[in-house]
Image (cartoon, rainbow, N blue to C red; front, side):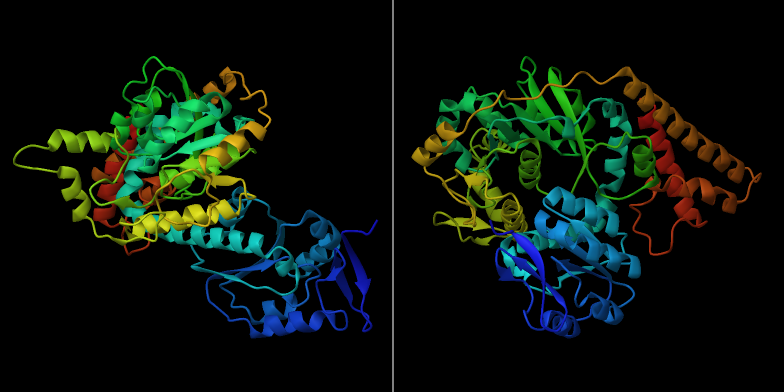
Length: 531
C-alpha cells in the first residue's frame, strides 16, 4: 500500500515532499520556486504573514531577511500527516529563527486562539504567503482559514472603535455577572444530535412546520430574537444564544418562566437576562480587549472559554453550533436581507412594536422604518430583497465561517442573501435527518463544585479591595496628602477602568480630566461588584 506522504531526494541533493504520489516541490530543484516566491512577495509593515503548509521551510529564511521588523511570519498546517512528516525541519527552523512559529490549525477556534495570542494591537494587515504545493493540496481549506483570519483582523479594529462607546457597559456587566462564572463553561456542553439554528429573518416563518415535524430529531438552537416566533408556534427551543449587552432583548424572553432550556450567554450580556429562572447556564466570553481584569480571571482559571467577537448574534450562534456538535448543522432565518416593509419574521418583538405603533395618523410604521435605513438591492434567493453594508458583511462572515466547518452546514431558508452554502429542499432535509444516527443527545455535567463558587467570591473580594485602595489613595490626593503620580501604579493595575477612553495621550497620566473620569469609573464598577 502506497504511503500517503513521504520524503524523497532530488538530483541536486535537496529533499522534497510527496503527497499521494504528487510532488509538492519541483522534482529537480525543490527550493528554487519557494525562494522565487519569497523574493517576489510584497513587503508590508505591521502585517501577520501566514505560510500555508510550510513543509520543509524552503524560502522562509530569505523571506525573514526581507520582512519588516514590525511584521511577523507564522506557518500553519491543516494536514496532520504532513505536519508529522515535516515536524523535525520546522522545529529546526523555529530554533534558528526565534520569531517564527508553526502550528497545526484545523478549526476556526484554533485559528482564533492563535490570533488572540499574536495580536497585541501592533498588526493591521494579514497576508498569505504560499511557498510550495502544500497550499494547493488543501487550497479551499487554507483560503477559508485565511478569510476567517481577515475577518478576525477586521473585527478587532472595528471593535476598537466600538469600545469607545460600549466598553464601559461591557465592563459594568462583567462586574455584575462575575458570580455566574461559577456556572458551567460552554466547553462542558455537547450534543450528538444535528443542530438546527434559527435566526429571526423572514425565512424562519416557512421553516416552522418543518421544525415542528422533526422537533425530537434535532437540537434546536435559536438567537434571542427568534425565540418569540418559535414560542408562539408552540415550539420550545433547546438552547438560546444571549449576547446583547443592552436591555433591548428583554422582551425576547417573555413567556419562558415555566420552561427549561439551555442559555448560552456571553459573560458581558445584560445582567437581567442571566437571571432567568429554570435555565441551565453555559458561559463564554467574546474577547473585546485584554485587560488586567481578564488576565487575573485567566490566572485564577475563572475566565470562560473565549470565542472571537463576530458582531452578529447569528454568526456567533453558528460558531457556537459548530463547537457544541460535530453533527450536521441546518440554518434558517439567517437572511441578512429583507423585503422593504418587513425586516424580521412575524411575531418578533420588533414586529410587535411596529404593530403597537400603528394608527390612523402613523400608518405602516414597519415599512416607514425599513425605508429610513440606507439600503440597496441584494443578490438574493428571491427578487425584491434589499440589504445594507453591515448586513452584507455579516452574510460574508457567515459564508466564510461555513467554509471552515467541513461541509456540514446546510441552508433551509427560502429567502435571504445568495451564499455559497448548500441549500436543501424539504425532501432532502427529511432524507438527511432520517439517515443521521441520533445519539444519546446531550452530555450531562454535575453542578459547579463549591470550590469554584468560593474562588469566584474570593476573586470578587480581591477586586473590591483593589478598587477601595485606589479610591482611598484618591482621597489622599484630594486632601493633598499624596501626589497624583502615586496613583498611576494603582490605576494601571485596574486598566479596565479606562481601556475604552478615546484619549489621544498615552494612558494613564496625571491630567485632571483623565483622573476624574477614572475615579468615576472606579466608583461605578465598585458598586456593581458589590451587588
